[in-house]
Image 1 (cartoon, rainbow, N blue to C red):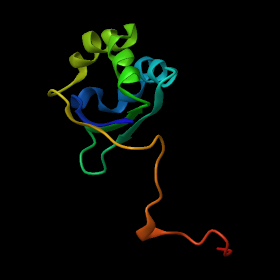
Image 2: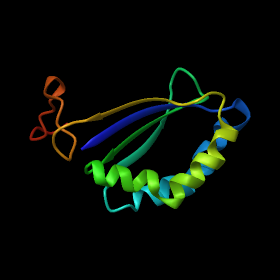
Image 3: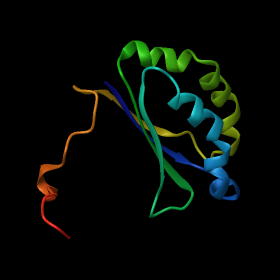
Amino acid sequence: MIFIAARFLVQSEHADNWPEVSRSFTESTRSEEGCLWFDWSRSLDDPNEYVLLEAFRDEDAGASHVQSEHFQAATRELPGYLAETPRIVNTQVPGLEWAQLGELAVDESSPS
């Protein structure tokens, strides 16, 4: 899979509205056949920063994503809300799902 982590520093006046600002792009991307996940989180340290974790099935799905109309629209529209160019890590990893974090295993068979 193609795994991407990106940090978006949003202008402070738009930070609270970022989920709505990015909603169309998010929903369109999530509906792509090759999209495995596309999830935003807000930083606990900086309320103006959002982190996007996204994954695509393979290189073809990633290419289809960047060639889509909604991606092209996002490249035109979203920079106007940002304080700086987003930072990104983009890599290929084996598999198509999240693996369990064994060091923090939870015994799901015992009652809480």
